[in-house]
Amino acid sequence: MTPVLAVEHLSVEVGTRRGALVAVDDVSFEIAPGEVLGLVGESGAGKSLTGTAIIGLLDPPLRKARGRILLAGRRIDDLPAQAMRVLRGRHIGAVFQDPLTSLNPLLTVGRQLVQTILAHLDISAHEARKRAVLLLGEVGIPAVRERLDSYPHELSGGMRQRVVLALAFACEPTLVVADEPTTALDVSIQAQVIEVLKRMCRERGSAVLLITHDMGVIAETADRVAVMYAGRLVEVGPARRMLAQPLHPYTRGLISSIPRMRAHRGMLSQIDGSMPRLDALPPGCSFHPRCPDRLPRCSLDRPQMLACGDGAAACWLTGPQPTGVQVEAADRE
Image (tube, rainbow, N blue to C red; front, side):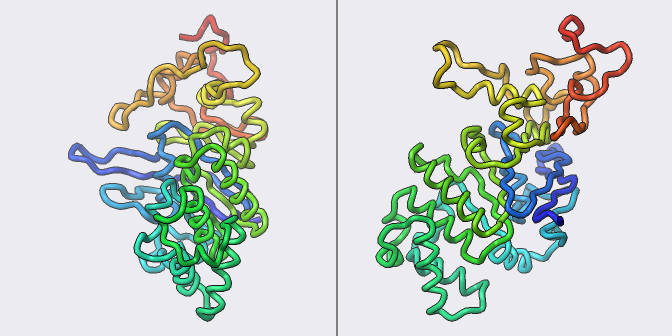
């Protein structure tokens, strides 16, 4: 089966006075039809840049340096700006963190939906308005016909995000890129928005790239998870297995930092240190200065993604060790 999205060796650079810095480094993954892939990591890991590169919205000084992006087998990263704009509205939907930045404050909700539908589908204005009413009902907007004439500032944050979801799915896209879609919402509203996103993807068979730092959202939504650190993928695997048995020490640290309701009270687990700057990446594995399980090799050689069971991880602990290097704690730094 041809994946809906295939990202192959993607690298994104940011230009500076001292030269280009690599912000996303050799990232590769695929998303199957109807699948939700969660892309997680700390702030600055490169998650949002990866999503921005996929939908073709990188602005200088950012640029795609290497790699290919394929949508349903068709390369899209080399398309002209106008062709990419048409593709974004028709075949790629986008949901961003702050709905106010996605909605035009000068246009009513209904007009924005109708304009989006008319721009990409060959239907009449009357049919477009009917479609807009159905979409707002699907995402859970109450009193739909009245809300069509509302402006974004007249809606709550949760309702605005539902409108953005309706816009993202307005033209039946094959791929939806959702970048932190629940971060600005209350916890109770987050669950409702996530449920709407899951249902609409399931009913339409759309593939979803869900970018988030919230492992709770991943547990509720994702089929597979890709973990990023310092611009590189460090682990990819099924969500259920990864949450129970992570392969990479960084993934393990992220999951162990989630508070447990039934756990005894005490200090929350944390990952010591902070993510390195792009202009000060350590040699070898970028995570090794913070890793509690590091080996002598980790500070010298950068690991590639190594297959392990139903997943893969960029960690020497998951692959064969060179002669004389043991995994035992006695030989760790």
